[in-house]
Image (tube, rainbow, N blue to C red; front, side, top):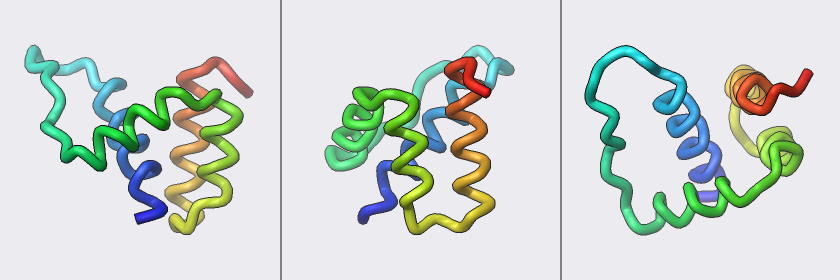
Length: 76
């Protein structure tokens, strides 16, 4: 359960970056997933990166998530 916010963040970032198609509705979330999404939205980019670095996700997933956070926020 500790990695759920990171999966939700990764899914949210990937969905928000896709511009093809006219259907912009997000898939429904469970109450716990919605809480995780809201919690992540309130974090600074630096906090998101720190959480990603400390998560139990595979290194490749961490790298991809950190890269997307940096790109989204204009960071190098």
